[in-house]
Image (cartoon, rainbow, N blue to C red; front, top):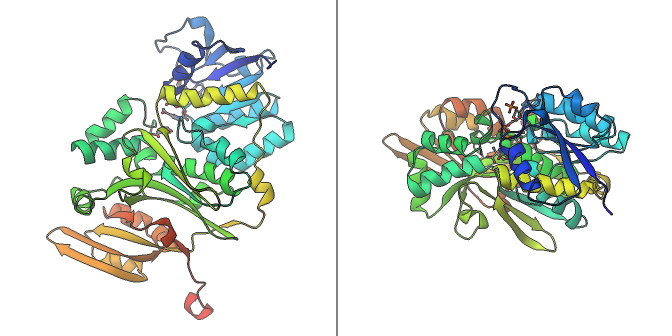
Length: 410
Ligand SMILES: NC(=O)C1=CN([C@@H]2O[C@H](COP(=O)(O)OP(=O)(O)OC[C@H]3O[C@@H](n4cnc5c(N)ncnc54)[C@H](OP(=O)(O)O)[C@@H]3O)[C@@H](O)[C@H]2O)C=CC1
Ligand SMILES: N[C@@H](CC=O)C(=O)O
């Protein structure tokens, strides 16, 4: 018999309400006892007695054994989750920024207090990728994980590419549908996809990477010329996070827009759908597909975690224990496309090879091989000068850069 879960829920927005809708249709051995929210004056769909603005009503309540954290405030979420884990309560969270930022601390708290933190809903909404990376691929060597990890930016790209809708209107729709973050720069700037990538990489490779070390370039500077370039080559542009093992000691992570061709699974992933491509040594290529944003899809993943807690499920971070020598690096070479206005940017980026250069009126682009570290150094410059960068290759083309001779380094 599974144990009864008495839940204290933090957050009753898109995902909190979505979870509540699903829970009430089920006859599980779980009960939502109290819901903490921020604004006591907001109109709610449930009786006032269930709500509180005092987090202690949940955290200090001995009857509540499980906390579900679904709020949009990273620091408050970390405080709530830390206190819950430290006081013997298991936690389910979907707050990817909080989890990616504080993953080492959260792993430590679980070890120290013997409590469990599950977060399937934090990565690609309804797609069960974390538990698969943790359990199913436990003994598999994973060459790469990549995909579409952000529903809002994919929604905007699909609306533009398939329906010709302008960027601002498509973003407004993504916000109205509850897909976008409170600050949508998180979505369109590739931050949200990066947080999710970092969480996935911890389970796939056992490396916990500081978000500040990982480049994220978004879709804000995408122009009609870039879309036209893709169309003419029968390509689509998607925002793609990549984690790739380069050799048995190095793994790299980056988030860049990518040209995707029609033989790739991601080509047909549209709107708020997400997709995850796993390239494994023995299983070869596998693809996971599902809704990546929205109250009910995310609520379904949160509920699956809650149900797993009835049987005391915990992540073991198995790869972290088994793979000791793997290190994160940005010292990789990759092929990119850069469309730009400011000619000096191309020189500053120091391409290793230029494959193609094009000038016509106000549309200029270059394709070539570059060191990722160079892109990181010039990231602000690229964004300020309204240049657009995309990964223009397959993952097999991403390689560890040769170590420079001392004379070249200095
Ligand atoms: N929307 C989506 O599709 C997905 C969202 N997520 C993540 O889930 C989390 C919630 O997202 P979402 O539901 O969209 O956000 P919303 O903005 O819709 O809702 C946020 C909720 O958090 C509450 N809240 C904020 N601060 C506090 C606090 N200090 N104490 C208690 N409650 C607080 C708000 O209260 P009030 O109602 O009073 O304003 C609100 O109910 C975020 O971390 C998001 O990144 C993950 C996957 C998908
Ligand atoms: N803002 C996110 C919500 C889900 O994680 C997205 O658009 O994917």
